[in-house]
Length: 346
Image (cartoon, rainbow, N blue to C red; front, top):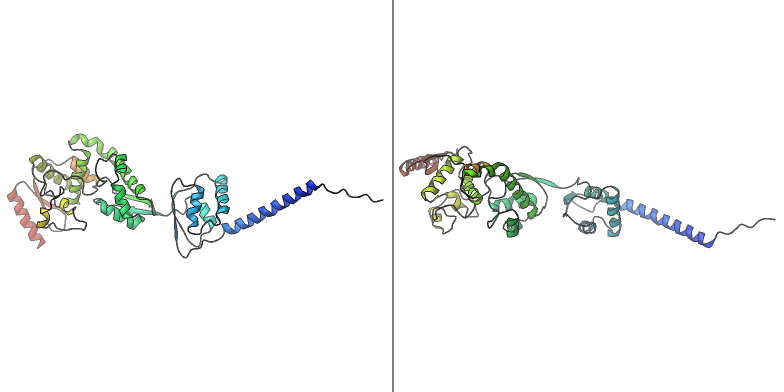
């Protein structure tokens, strides 16, 4: 007589059903995830994506979704958190550059490695004024020039960096930097101001005992010296001329301070320009102008602090393209030098 097989309990069948269903769902999700991760980005050219610092994972996905990356959102919310737990808990903020050759997996890996951050090398030469800094920032970094000026004149930003002036004019340190493409104006300006403070502390502060001028006055005078001569060896001499004029109560009569009033580049100052009623017109007003007219080099800053001791009160260019100047102790000698200048120009 054959024995009857015992039927499985109903609860066991339900358990098997649940397990098999979960397995099928997990397998389906794995296959779907693999497909979506290895899917190429929908792009006809380069895609630039900016991820600000302190952005949440949901915020990152929202930003990427604008360029049809990391879709669907629900899936990549799981994947980005899982990747973070398994491999790294830190993502890199900044601007990334992707193309149609990249996949969602490339993007995911890039976020936690920083491999595809788009970094640009930018040089801000010595002697630039604030407008010129803004123009370079817009051209090279993609930072809006209007926003740059706005941040550079923001009282909160200036106070944070110890600047008691209407703008950061003269305080932005000229140098070569690496920035992320489309990096914010605040980030850029903060970086330039930080380096200025660092250089000032390391190479200038210990020499302040040599002058009675304030930091702002030193930068103001240094910016004029910077604009007057590109030759480091001449700068202490020119500084001596201006210190002599200040002691004598003479007007500085510095062409660069008048040129500063114009947006466009000016090679010459016209006679009518000398009548402009502005505190930056050192032909009309005695003493130093209200502030720097550019960001001077370290050479000019040190020259402003340590002028050559001389009796010169005038100087004029050679006029031969060498950028050199002739210096004079008297008006008569100066007029002779002016004649030589005009002859060289003719």
